[in-house]
Length: 294
Image (cartoon, rainbow, N blue to C red; front, side):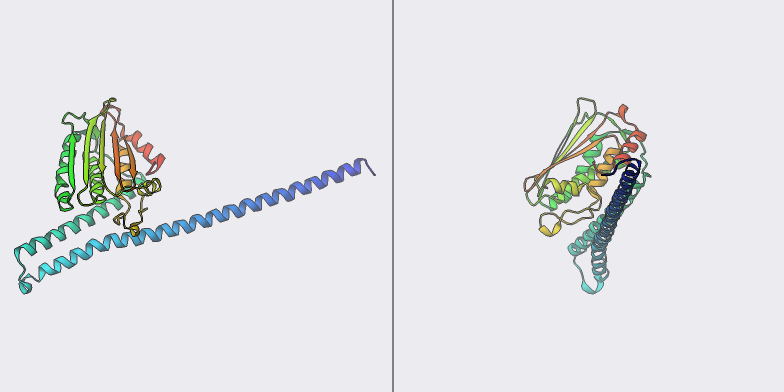
C-alpha cells in the first residue's frame, strides 16, 4: 500500500470531485422541485381563474335572465292583460334579481379593493344598536317568504364603537342574509348583541340551517371558493359574502369567528373593540398582513 503526499492529494481531489457531484445533484433536485412547485401553482392559479370566471358568469347571468324575462312579461301587459297581482309579482321578481346582481357586483369590487389595500373607512362614532335593528327589519320580509323565524335580542345600551357605519352594516347584513339563505323552511335565525367586559361589542348570528364541517368553514372563508352546491345541502353563490364580511370586521379591529355543525346549524360571532382602541391604520395593516381570512 502506497502512502504519502501523492495519496493525500488524490484523496483530496476525489473528495472535491464527490462534493462537486453531490452539490450538482442537490441543485438539480432543488431545481426540479421548484419547477414542479411552480407548475402546480400555475395549474392551480389557472383552475381558480377558470372556476372564478365560471362562477361569476353564472352569478351574473342568473339575475340578469330574471330581470330580462320578467321585464319582458311586463312590457307585454297590453297584449297579455296582466292582472294587478301579476304585475306586482313580476315587478318584485325584477327588484329582487336586481338587488342580488348589485350585491354580487359590490362584493367583487369590495374584494378587489381589500386585496389591493385600497379600501378606505369613513370612521366615526357608530351606534350598532341602530344598525342592527335596521338590518333585521330589512330582512324581515325575506325571512317571512322563506317561512323562517327571525328573532333578535339587541341591547339598547350597546357601547358606541368607532368605524364606518356603511361598511359595518354591509358586513352584518351579509351575515344575516347568509343565515337566512342557508336555513330551511320553519327554521330559526337569531341575532344577539351585547357589550363585552372590555367595553366592546359582541354580535352573535345563529341559525338552525344545514351547517358546515371544518373543511367547509375554511372554504366559506376563502374568497371565490364555494361550498359544493351539487351535494344539495348548500345554495350556490359567488363565494364572496363571508370573506368580505370577515375582512370588513377585521378592518375595524374586530374578529369574526365561525362555529358550525352539519345538519345542526351555524353560529357566527363578531366582536368589535371599544371605540378608543380602534385605529384605522393599524387595523388595515393587520388585514393586509394576514390576508382576507384567518
